[in-house]
Amino acid sequence: MIAGTETTERRRARIRLADVHLAFGPQPVLRGVSLDVHEGETLVVVGRSGEGKSVLLKTIDGILKPDRGEVWVDQERMDSLRARELSLARRKIAMVFQGAALFDSMTVEENVAFPYVEHGTCRTAEVRERVVENLRRVHLTDPAVFSKKPAELSGGMKKRVGVARALSMEPEIILWDEPTTGLDPVTADAINDLILETQASTRATSVVVTHDMASAFKVGNRVAMLHQGRVVYTGSVEETRATENPLVRQFVEGRASGPLTDGARDG
Amino acid sequence: MSSSVSLPDIPGRERSLLAPLRWLESACLHIGGVSILFASALSRVFQRPFRMRQWIAQMEQVGVHSISVALLTATFTGMVMVLQTGVQLSRFQSESMTPGIAGIALLREIAPVLTALAIAARVGAGIAAELGTMRVTEQIDALESMGSDPIHYLVVPRLVACVVMVPALTILSDLVGILGGCLIGVTKLDITLQAYLDTTFRWVNPEDFYSGFLKTIVFGGIVATIGCYLGLKSSGGAEGVGTATTRSVVVSFILILVSDYFLTEILLKVL
Image (cartoon, rainbow over all chains, first blue to last red; front, side, top):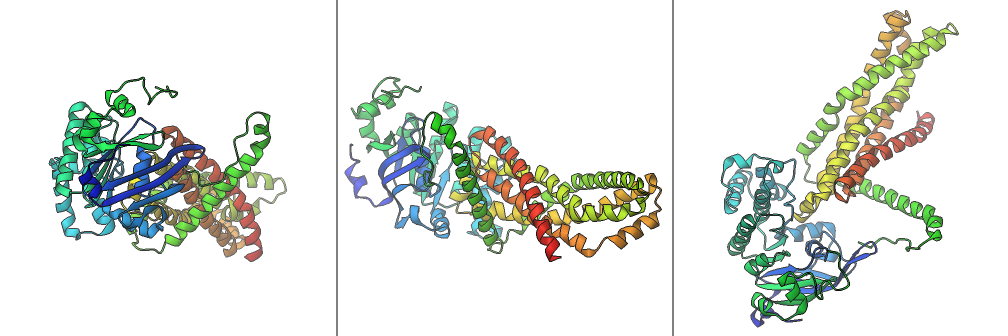
């Protein structure tokens, strides 16, 4: 394993996973993941489909509890908090879901207002103002969009609304699940720009899960690779571009044959 | 997650021998899951914040939108009850007893059970489909990740709505069922309106009404809890949601009919 840059290592770890194991029934998904995410950095987790990248994010957010190991966010151990404490701990973390996971029954405006309304984090009179501001930050300024239901939006717009809703959490940590998957290259790049803008404006610590290497190199400070339920590589973006690690090289170059697929040719 | 204890995978003939044990294991896990969900929801009913908007919206969904199906069911059931009872009793020249017998049957059994079954088919299936879709599209994960409690936010309003509105609809079904029966008694059995109503009020006691009414509180709880449980447990996309929806109807029907017998046993002793 290649270590990250020295500057990164010196910073405080806001997220720490230690020997995390998690299985769905007889199927192991995470088999001893250990990982640190430092304050203010954007760690990109890459890996093949089905390697447990999204599961890793949900484990950090406390949605899934590991069978073994420890998940720390700041001073709180997420895997052993009680429901009420976990609910409070989650309020500084925002997750942007792969399919946006907007509430079908609500309009765009209601979706983005949800964290404010639910947790009473701002005065009722200010909610609309903040919602409009958050939608403006994701470049949704047309008032006609505000009253639309998620089913009426395109994939790219849904992602933007998902980001706006995440911004309403006023998060210190943002977890991005496959932000560019399923989008055309132009929209995908616009979403990458949006991630960078969000990082710049919130200064949040971020974990981005993706298998899109163009996105990984554009938005990340550091890259970790998940393979067979373990982190097999971590390194800065520059180190990752230059690495000779055969697993990473095969993934970056998108080759069908190599150590990633040896003995597991499932397409 | 693999937190639950499961029987090991055994290939071949042993697998079929272990099938009943696996079924039993699965049944116990589901019974446990439903009980925990019900207890969790019950413990959160009086927990702040009170989501009155959602409670009212769900009551409208469960009650107001089900009025037509419940009343249609009750009207025609009352009509057919009186027709069948009247025709059979006329063989013994006892058709004058028809309003009383039909009234008691309607209030004690027919209206509560059929109303609950109609709500299970309409509302229970809807709850399972809605929550199932929310589960497979990660909306429930999103709710959790934003620090909200899905049981407090989604299950409690539905449970409250069903527990309040199924009994309310049953009262309407009782009335409409008796009126439907009255229509048939007057037009087909040559019983006068005055005689029909007199016999009904003479035969039917408040206990008959209470007996049916109390059962529907339990039936409402069953419809909401089963719909929510199977919806929240959905997995595997559209197919999983479809399976959850079908199962919620089947399981609710079975539990309503089985619990009806035991509740009747208890209420006959208590009332």
